[in-house]
Image (cartoon, rainbow, N blue to C red; front, top):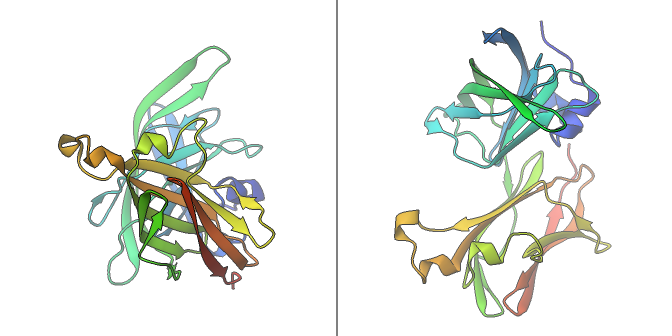
Length: 260
């Protein structure tokens, strides 16, 4: 038996209009007296999303997802879905690496769920595990310059693509540390604007150093890798990515096709 997805489930995971691309499952895993059902999953090159049912008042906490090649090492988030009692989702800001057939073989492991109270948090440790094959949706590269000056900084585009669910950017900005491009009170270094100059809020955004921690020094620390995801507009349209910082600005025009 497969499980239906409510509109709230899809909206919470930014997958509205993509129900046909969400693979459905009904796989139980029981640990520590709690049975959790994996009811669905979605993946593209930018993100991996899994849906759970039966978590009750808990939120899924510690999750590890591996594919054919090992751990998917990416930022993550997840929460209970209201008012769908017992439903939860977990998303990784990175896609799995599929085989030649476009299918990734995932092992999903949950080792902790948490229940939040007014003044405390209770945890339930366990070992909930699922193994699934999952089709990885495609992505389309968007035209962009390879490099450009941004005032006294310099930017290099590594990835600019659109998937069925998001517009995905990964870039390196030379001349500034991660703590100076992302954080409380710091203006966003890049924004997505539509044709009326209205900003689209990002659903994932981060900055980090570009070298392993053991190689960080005062010079290498002044280079930041940034990665952002914005929800893909179902109707498409014309947009621009506006970079601002280092005393300069730069805009990349984008044309997004409607979802078919």
